[in-house]
Length: 117
Image (cartoon, rainbow, N blue to C red; front, side):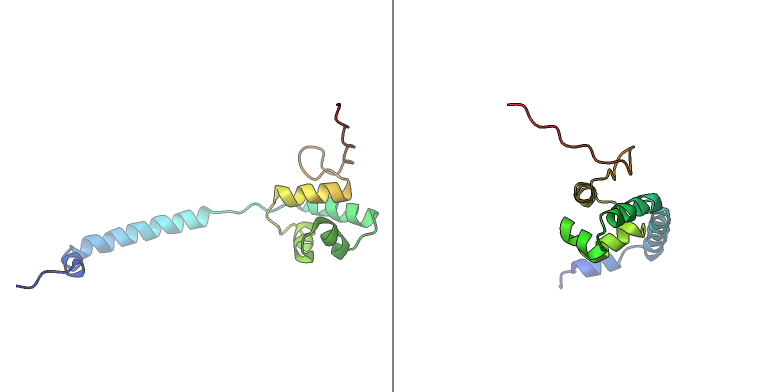
């Protein structure tokens, strides 16, 4: 007598039940996908970055070199198409000398306080 393989055992299941489950899980997955939304940087932040860069008379290439990022990343931030990354924003803050995170966006970056010994 030949032993049944796992595939044979699975094939014996109720086909209508598995089809109903597949439809249920597919519709549930579609609902989750439709609700998914990725936040991008606001357009106002892109304008602040662009104005600060132009005030230093830098090109997007030069800003990219200062923050060690590709020009494409700088263009995405300035056109408000980038997904916010705090590390990149922090590097741009230091390079441009302007706050790009928090409440005071666009304000000059305060000079660091020297540490007491």
